[in-house]
Amino acid sequence: MITVRIRFEKTGEAAYISLLDLQRVFHRILKRSGLPVYYTQGFNPHIYLSFACPLSLGQESLCECCEVKTEAEDPQLDTWCDVLQPYMPRGIKVLSAQQAQNKVAEIDHASYLVTLPASAAAALDAYNAAENAMVVKKTKRGQKELDLKTIIPHVEYEQAGEQLQFNLVLPCGSGEAPNYNPALLLGYLQQQYNIPPWLCSVLRTKLYTKNNEEFC
Image (cartoon, rainbow, N blue to C red):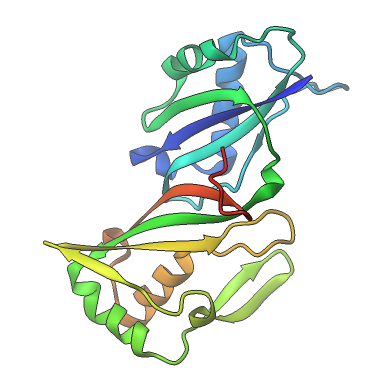
């Protein structure tokens, strides 16, 4: 049995597909596709399917991935993209389907492109000048107070017309590993400086391992 990693983009209106709905979409598509995917055993067999570092609702990504398994001797992975894409909802583009060469647990951090309205420049300047920026982070064990400045000490942004953009690199581990979302910073800016949330966007661009190698 081999593990097949399916890489895909999730942009546009697909950003508003929740993880639960995304799982349902992929289950349905994989069933329709007729691809030789592995089903779990027992009274209620279902397709083995797992997603790596799922996004928050409303965020876009160029580097999403999920994994399935197959027992086929020759699963013809080079055909999977063409088979799956016609079934995909708008905004999801299948990039590749390959045998996994590493483990999802090796994901350590991710890069993001954040876009805000140009009027947010003053808010970012104030954030950069602040000694601390306290937020509440939800965890599996409850809530904890966090100083964002220990995670994002400074934001270097560029302004172009009516927008400004900046890149963030944040821990994006699995299990008990640290995991920080750009939404923490956006939430802080929106609350403290009244930045309109509908004018803010987040695009995840790459996933990396601890060795700073691109995860694929």
